[in-house]
Length: 436
Image (cartoon, rainbow, N blue to C red; front, side):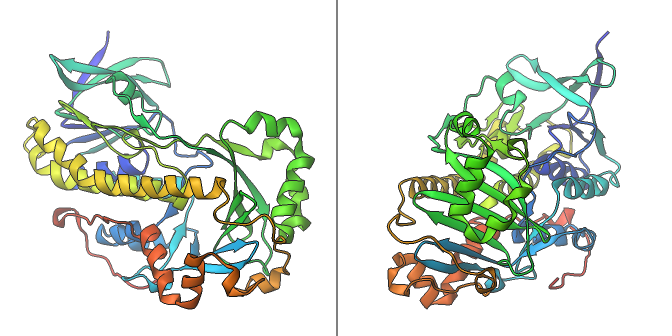
């Protein structure tokens, strides 16, 4: 027999958006249950950049010191390597506030931290191995979910005043509600792989553009997390060309990394990220709200997906917790307020990502006629060593080199974003906010 229970708020998905929302709702005194499909948070190749806006939020929630104790790598600058030269394009030391960096932390550590903080609240419940398989309706209104316990196959029903879908870009809840996102054409997919890092290598984030080829290297201390952009749908063709051909492409694009390509032992070491850029026209139904990737799948450009989802969760809690605190039904007009607040920063960032996609694959960011960068790693480590005169660079890069203060603009757009969200007063806890 199908078991049934009731809570006030059901959150589907134990990712960053789901757990932050669960924590905030519980601190508001709302009975909240988070359903997580897996037994733990150990999944590889998930977004693990925690930006300055989220670091500030953690301070406000009293979790800053706990987060600072996690093993992490910090990025405070980003540079781009063109055939014309090497330019530092973002300087996070120019950011306001206590955090002038982006923290790289395995996402499972971040999620464990938030889950542990949430479980300190008496109205919070986290159910693991709970795979949502459908929605529960009361007339035309969503009144909860059905889920399968993956440990024994039993099925359960949870009814709630509000269901919030935070279950990612392949959202089961979204499909069950019959919602179809608008898909924007994306010309790229991404190959993810790791290569060893030397002490003489550049520091921070590095982008490399040449002849419409683009790679991004994220400094993880003892290794680089590398993203190599490929044309959409080219995965099978490139794998058929073999490992040696891929090594040759990387060596040509990044000569200073040619000495370590043997670390790629097979193409099994290279993972495909199927890039999507999508957005729902309507993020809600009666009794249902979708946020994060369930409402708007982001490109990896800028690495902003996690932090945008967290901002969605904060806005959702601030706007909806007062109505939920009494256990009543949240009017759809209130759900609409969440979309109105979070729609424009989402659309703005996605528009920027679309421009970046086109720029890379139309070759606007590089010229094929100039020689490839072939400087010694020690020179590159200085951060902005020119290979050609400044005048040979595209105008935006000439400006950020000539006027370093402009490097604070991309730093702010990426690390803070167009509409950072702050913890409501009722969710805050005392913490020491220091420059760490």
